[in-house]
Image 1: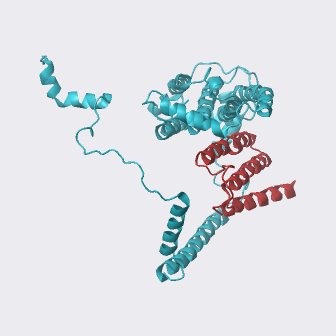
Image 2 (image 1 turned 120 degrees about the vertical axis):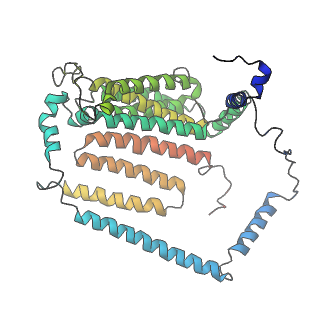
Image 3 (image 1 turned 90 degrees about the vertical axis):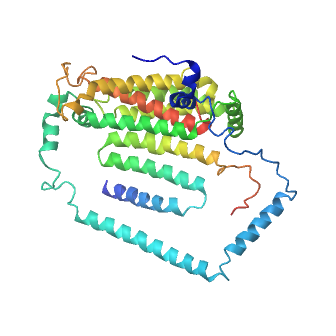
Length: 322
Length: 87
């Protein structure tokens, strides 16, 4: 039923202009808006004179001795801010004083939920560490949201801080060279210490992730430790070394795989109304490393996402890309 | 161990006030780091080692590093600045 248009008439349609705009082939301002090339700065005065002039202007504007309004405003502003802070502190302390004492058996949080977690947690989740059993089994859907929040945070930072590759990486190179100015390049002490300590940090992080269901820790803590190790390595050896194994592509692949595996494993809660489904994976012996069903793979997923996020944050803050 | 807990909590309050009253951003940042470190010790005393590990890695480690990078980018900790004109 579709009518095949010739190219001329297609170019007149809105869809064509929309897709052209979407692909970035056409600058909507070019030719439409009046543009002028900026002329070079012609002021011959030295920086010192400019500073003096600026100070003179500031003195004139904020002349507290003569301008009554600003003096009045500043006094009232100070008083109001102090009063506001004190009032806020008072309200918060009042709320704390009304809350029941910690550890009291009659507290409202002493209902059947924590009792169920503590009494049946080991049998139902197979995790010796009850905290991990809670966040990755009973409350796994919440943790799914948390790891997506991290991913979205990285995307936001990426949007805000990314440096465009328009001029064939020129801008990026300049930024990188600029970045090197602050860095003691090939600092001997830092490198020797990093060689010793980075493998230990990363192995400890992997240990924390893999033992998340047996000992304190878990995906988030272990991922943060690995991320900190990667940042230390990056500081000691520079981007040239880390880009051998970690680039934007690696980040995309790791985050995509981990988050989609997590989604597949746990997002059924969304459709079952937060009810549990049997995964069919045997829980194993509590205390063994291959036990407690889905908790270990989910821990690894969360750890990978967190480690990549930490490293990506640092790389984006440093030079706007990685 | 009660008295040690009180010392740590007092240190937390002092740190929190000192961060906002310090003029130099680098000093504020270092105080903020020590705040996170003491906070992770407090978590251990409150018997939540999970949070202690996370606090030490995220609060004292990654967050502070990000703050350092930001301060460097906005030239707030540039040592080569001649004199101290701004103060």
